Length: 612
Ligand code: F6R
Image 1 (cartoon, protein in one colour):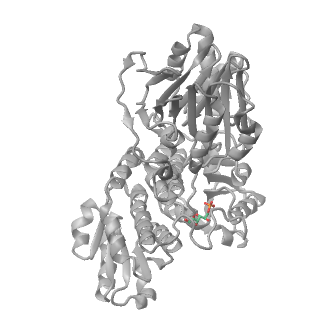
Image 2: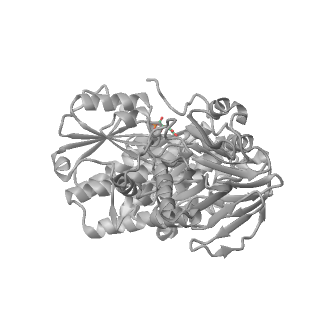
């Protein structure tokens, strides 16, 4: 995700900023920039799409920009594609104010309209530039930078970590945060702001964590922190006790683990800007209730884990939309002479937005007249550009080859979209709609609680990592979740594994069950729990070792049959796979760890599959 660093001190700022940005490269980014101020040259802003090396080359390692105060940013696009103009820092119209921003401003369109009416000209498509322009607007009103920052913070909604410099305020950095991390660093050579300790750990271990809605004024001499009404706050200092080498992956041993742990925050980002006043609001979906009525067929098309999201969504959308929903593998769909015309909605799902089969399937659907809607993580990617409508997952960059947080955010976004479409069609009861929405908003915290204590999953992985073949069985949404659990295990641990709909076992697969075979029995779907249990009894009777996954209310019944049981929090049935899958990701992760596999880069696999 985006990274922020700011420095003010007794040394040249640019080399410090470039070094700090380089230390945050592990977070992933698509463009980078710095703004440095000096008395002689004023505000100098340099930014570029692409690698940090390109930025460093642009400023000759920092030699081309002069000044001891500056801000830097690595951007991962959320609003507007990766480009030089959309890169941060963003500068106000007069060139007086430069700003870097992490997070998402939810009401930026409304503010942009307001500023456009006041004659402000915008150069980028970002929500962040809106903050820079709004700041200048208020500064022109009150001629007091801190007062202007306060006015901006009272007006913007969403999440932000902000680093600001202003020509009229020449010796200070201003920082503010809400729902996006920002720390203050106290160093020998000067003081810092950073979104990530890794950016500044080379220079200082003495840090202060900013709280939501606090504002900091950072100078070479010291740091003052205020509440939103400008009351001074005395902050507790912390000593960072880990070193630079541990910082490579933000302190996590693998990107996959880091990304698993980031899921509550990632789905919060996906959800929160899209729920307003108890309703799902999808500004980027531009078709109407009448359009929706005309769609007689709905296809969900994708590859791999994204396809597995489609399988879950097929069950959920049929329930919510009371329409037939078909889910197809993109590589099959494109060559199947699909029954698609102008009365068809084709939803494609892709983390990378570059998967060739998904792209080709979408083009084929468009050629036949379908309306296409893409669920994509990478902003400005090919699929995002070509789809009729696009919804971004806002998961942040996913670096591990095996997807985790992208899968989870795709799933959540499909739930939101299902609710939205059902609302357009009037096919969902208000009580059901409200219940899903309420539990959706509680989901990030539930997921966090599970991630705060999963010692049992780790233990079961150490108990079962030696198996050569694993079956995941379940019914309905549990089956759909099992497809993803099984794929996670096979791709990173190289253990052969298959997911089956439990009801299918007797039609052939059960012949593979022999004493000691590991069966992961998924029993979180309450409506079919008894049926699922009878299948578990069948495999137990043939000697299988059963590792079960269930929810608290079902735990007791499950424990009577299974050899080991993992318990995840309970939520609305539609959302239950989102919690269950996290346990399956962790199980796969720890099994692969026990087997000494290259978790982040499994053999033969690539992050983005741009060939057939
Ligand atoms: C598995 C995985 C793949 C991708 C698939 C589609 O962990 O990551 O199965 O889901 O290659 O990729 P996208 O979503 O980029 O189209």
